[in-house]
Length: 266
Image (spheres, rainbow, N blue to C red):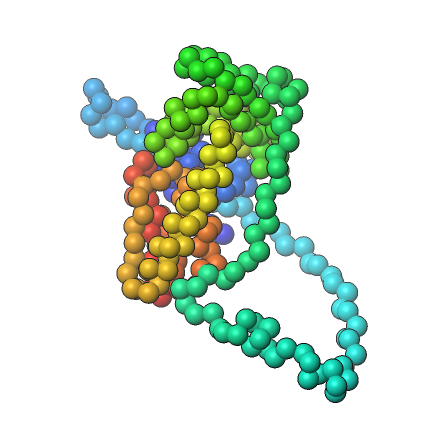
């Protein structure tokens, strides 16, 4: 059962950072406010909010499986044609520093709903926000298993993305706050804002960076601290290396300078 602390300019922002990094929704955690934000006097003595999120325990239901009947043993003439165990494994054993290769299914194409884009309040808020930024754009919307996805079609996508996605993340944060402002704790909805498929491209870049760095850490035995990233990008690094032998990952520091550390697995 995971329990982690997160900081933010206010309690809502700290909770939002935590949910993104842990990859959970608000109904999957219990929330403890350790410290509320303080403004201080003339900006002096101001403190960020600190919360602790603890993943709720999910009862495990027993699964009953039917044991298949054993296959008949092959004839002697057939056994010699079967590949040896080392050939079936590709001829060599995995060493530390090599990821366990898994077939990664391609993400299904998102089918955006024109009617949803016109009627959804979050999509309308995003259109108003872009208009206030004096950006001409079209907003697409889709309901997915991962929550509400909004896509921006504009000729100024570089301006919308910003340095390492900071502008796009800020837009997504504002839309998420608006979309969840009147929702109860167990009704939190995740919102993802994208443009020009930036999220997928950035995720692939981070996964490659994580694997390259992990190989170096496994070979040298020395930990590497990555550059500070937002909770969403830190979660990508953590998930990319969950199955990577020889290394472990954790986050350290406070927002906005919190970073992932890739260290040898002792």
